Length: 269
Image 1 (cartoon, one colour):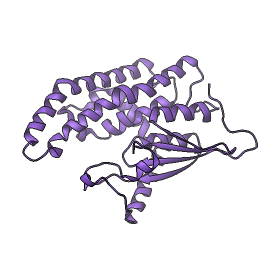
Image 2 (cartoon, helix red, strand yellow):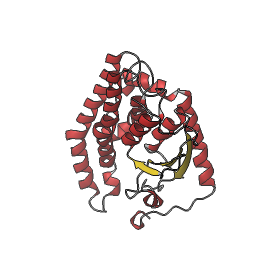
Image 3 (cartoon, one colour):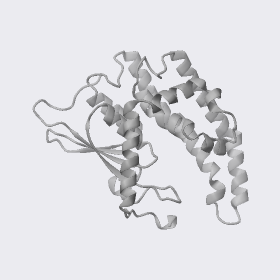
Image 4 (cartoon, rainbow, N blue to C red):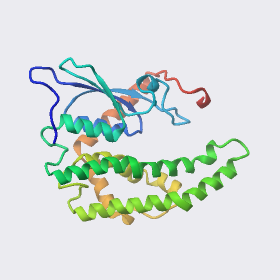
């Protein structure tokens, strides 16, 4: 059951989201926007060639990853810093969604949402990361080993990762069909849809040509998994989702124009 951590008579808690372009942090921003929390976004940009995040993120958290959320308590308690998308979403829902905006009221549906928070990061996302890394192996392998790296990576993808990825995508498509409401849990948008927006919509259905390069699958995935395709069309047209995407596109453009000086690991230069 959601509870509110803000104590009566104290200012609202503030949130600082450490946001990296084209990352899972966009989901956290969407969550904060939907719940109308008091947030600030600090932007970090990837290296244009290696696609790695800047060293400045290590000043925020030892892993150097995004998203990271800092919570400044309005009642004077020490601030906290939390990482990992699923945990961030779970913590914010438990403490800052008293009106059940993204949390179902039904206990069984609450369990379903919790399941998808773990499934998205624990089962689905790593498969897609492996596909991506293997697909670019020939480009990052040392000179003279590119052909070997390409053969090994292609064998791994074709022998394991593509099959597992297709099986999981079919599973997600089937769960949407079984629920029958257009959402993953219940009959409204929940945190399950929020967390799955990155691996399913942004990584796949908003990147169909890239997926073809990774999987060598030339089929129209909107026809292969029609319920996922319909869900993605719904997601991209939600006003709050459109708002944060437009906002961050503009913020990133403005930041790039200022020629920010981010530091990257020496081997990435």
